[in-house]
Length: 64
Image 1 (cartoon, rainbow, N blue to C red):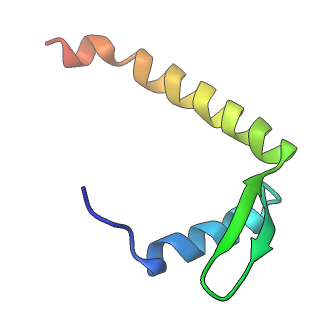
Image 2: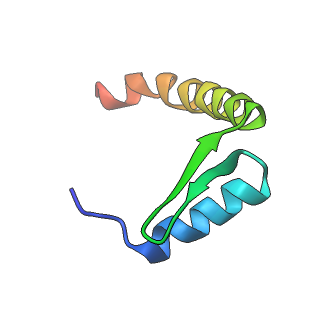
């Protein structure tokens, strides 16, 4: 429930951009806009698959 700070957001955006997972599409004085790249979509799909594999196997642990 809290709003992330610029100190949290900007390092993440920088890393995503360096990895070519996002690209800047527009910038003005008040805002920057990014979009996910094809490589970013592939990475998101892989990360989602890993997350599901890890945590779906753990559902039995939470039922105890």
